[in-house]
Image (tube, rainbow, N blue to C red; front, side, top):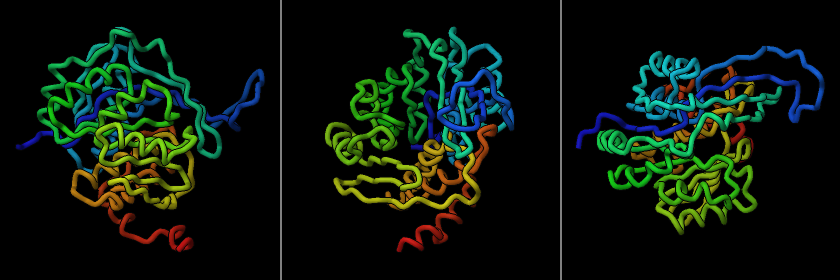
Length: 308
């Protein structure tokens, strides 16, 4: 079958207002003078995955609810400028937005505006079905409307990936995504026992591969009941912001996975893409290109060489 799209991204379109703070947690004070200032730009999880896989040369399509508001204009402009097709579902509540507090070390605290969603929000089933039929793979962001799209994707027999982000392994909200996906990403940040959670996802769900990213500690890769460690990659420049690193990791991994690479090679691609993302200022939406990723993935990493 011939497909028009390599990766269909569902959900996660929105706008962030980035505020640089002198430290996190931020002590109470009446006011702060901050630099480099406050910037609002398009780019949330789905946007970053769409941008990441597109920059790597994969044909990409993004669908989500978007409002007729200034934030929606920013989302539309991002996709238009990067040549990424966007299917907009009208949102009465407006485009999703958040405020990101970013510390000097690149750590962030995100404050999401929960008024920008409604219980009735859905992605039209016929539209999802049509887009899925034209796609090789679907990456699903863990937003409320996307949960209702999962059965439609399964019926379409498209492969599915998702990122559970900082799931604690207990919150039932994430389970629908974790158990429906063929490829599951998550962070170890809130996990008491990463291995147990990874094995539980694989045992109860459809996942053939589970990847738990651990920041500077690398990542854990579970394939065919075998757990291995993937070393981190030294960022090519100073770390300025960790926002979007997980989305970049997923994008790099998908490049390898859809190209038939073995899981270790896929994870290496993910690690390279994630390290690059940490060097991109939070005020920009940018991603590593295919040629640069492949070159870095092929080169021995200095930090890795020191450990071996």
